[in-house]
Image (cartoon, rainbow, N blue to C red; front, side, top):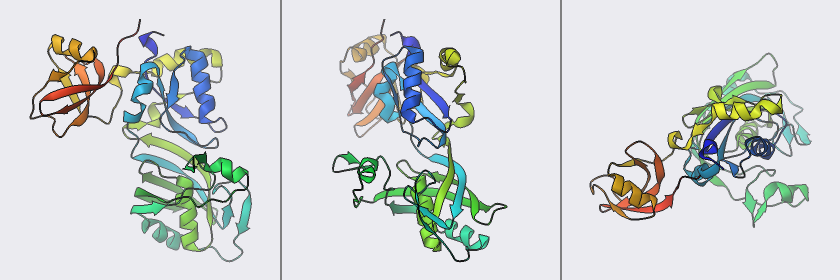
Length: 300
């Protein structure tokens, strides 16, 4: 595989296919054996899905994954097995629904750092098994709560009393379905996600993403037009530029090089580039020494 398919492709996933379906389409269209993602979306969800190809698959864990922005519609007065309408309804609220002012106030109170229990139907693992696999078998498990951060949670009334639009900005690992579930629980009437769209991940926006063409034959050209080359990929790492060609060659070959001891410090991981901006790999810098932790040799 040539370097032409090394990089990141932001895709606007439609409702219906799984994230793995999209990966399979891209793999078939690009001819690349190495295609991965940096985080899935539920089949019914739409929006920004980040795929990494070729050597960039090794950088997936360094691609920005927060904050994440979502928008959609939620329904009050219903509880489901999956916390959205893909599951079965387990309870319908038979009393009056809370007022719009009450809903807005409850949403505004649920900001900041907090603990979240993932949905029963989720990819979180318990005892080495995905929770959704256990749930499908009827196995009830106590999933450990994880710490999340909700930076924004705004809701707005619609023409239907039970429906509210929402927008939220949350940390990586947050389940939107669980946010809505817990909001419904706090309101005493239950709530479930009607629709969900991811509009941003870190600096990347769905407005700049590839809308998958209906004609799969044209997908290859569309992918190439939207590919962010590996040297231009956004990474959650500081950068170190090796201005000496000798140092760049030594690092690319897996050798240790010396750097300015004043910057960076504390043995931080950093993206290492040559003086032309080409990404050589990831190194660990400290005490004036830069040690390779991952090198990215060019492929023929």
